[in-house]
Picture 1 (spheres, rainbow, N blue to C red):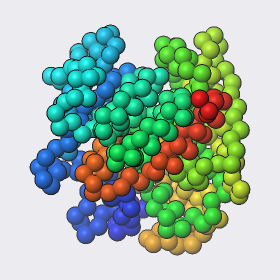
Picture 2 (tube, rainbow, N blue to C red):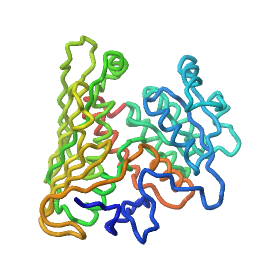
Picture 3 (tube, helix red, strand yellow):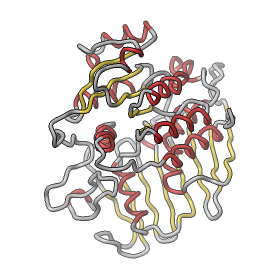
Length: 365
């Protein structure tokens, strides 16, 4: 069993380290340490209605790179609930106008309910701020594209909150692809499912995109990262639960490319679904499977030896992965001008288009 974190296998082009090098490199999932100039980035959170809001706030408050200077939640009930959470303890609560006018504010994490996210993201971008926008990017592709273009024109970044981008198994995959280890890619499979309880289903049913909109968007981001934008998307949707709640809970999308096919599957009914969440990439020279995604382990098959890896199948181990830590660290590096984002505007636009198409939603309004 290979352990890429104890050998000089890879250094990520994203600036995140995926292997030990000269015994002095950081490990994904660990904080990157205080900024070299000692000045932390002033960030605020707009909204607490997103499922990832508390986790993101925890990551920013634990980071040496950021100073959380305030929060805003327009919904009174959500705001009061958040006040009682230790994650938000002693934070200053502000109106959106007050938040956007905070002296020295550099970035905002937009963590509202998805239906409200583009409105608030646009306000932040218009104010000249970097934003972290949690997934998916609303339901209007034209509005999202305008936000991306406006931010770029102001020299600001929109970091999307797809939670597997900095997963060490996925970073390992990106490096294997960059090195050409897998050859020409012809097949990709991705699954992201779980059991959603009756209460959660009710909230998700408010969105016509169903479980693909909520969960499948994460793995669509991964597929686009491997193959780029598809020529065509075929979407299939079912309501499989005996609950008559209107949630489209069993969904499949097939992405068509000139020489490749990709499938994306998401369900709200799979027992122990976390354990079977996976991404499989098949190429002419090898296959790489990341499963489970949330606590990544990789099975790698190669047609011939590559680097420190042998021909045939082998397992690649990773240290314990903590969500959001590396997202925050990379966001800080981008804001400081130490690097460019590894995810282009074109990538984010393609992801959002495919998400909407996979949900059978319009892309022109």
